[in-house]
Image 1 (cartoon, rainbow, N blue to C red):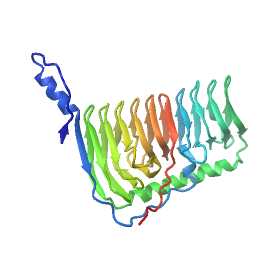
Image 2: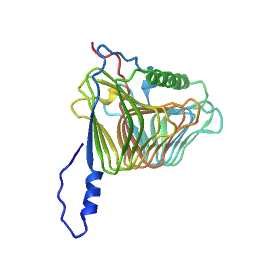
Image 3: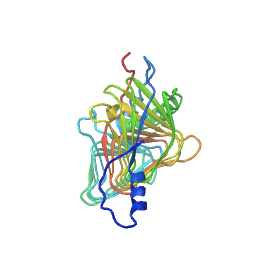
Image 4: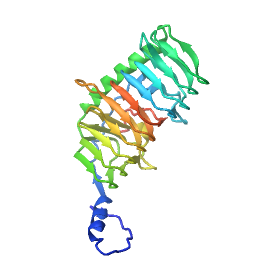
Length: 315
């Protein structure tokens, strides 16, 4: 363990404060054991790879949210759940909005929201306001996109179970970072399966996942995950690609504070309890969010679609 260097103007009685600050910005570096040679990884189902945001329950996106892609996928990201509620000016979805609800309001758009693709429900109504709209509308309950949604939900549940059964290449136990602490996790080539008990960050933290280009990383988090405001989870810029990183969150109700930045696909499937993935305002995700529960963005959430496309790494 080392500490970053910084300058501080000494004042009488400041020694205790100085020691506290040093502890708060300490840096950790963990090296994973080498990945097993020739390890392989089954792919996430093709239907699930179409979704930037996927739930079996409700999806609530606060005003000014955006779900989009910039050359990270051959197709715009789908958004699908039982109901889809988009909170208002000016939220923007580049793909389709699909709600399986057969009654009530399946898709609710506030004023000036835009869905570039289709708005589709299982028979429920589509509510629109002033200056908003969808590329097309279908509340007949017969659209093939409803089958795509159902198949994707099944894909995610099956894949979460598969990921949880992989043999770890490294086990890190629980991770708890005090405010402003940093951590680097160094991983190897090929397939890395990282087992973590729980992750809690107090805020303003940075976690860097460092792996060579072409590596594949599965992170199984068996317990809770709670990232404090301003926490950032990065991949090293010249190495690990967000397409090749998946977070399998096995505990219920993961929470992400205001201004959290995260790379990789988040999968949250809980078998026995209900679960809600919660984002505070200003969260930025480079990947996807897939759950068998609900998704609640309490403030603007911005998702840049990088579907998890990892397959078998080279031997």
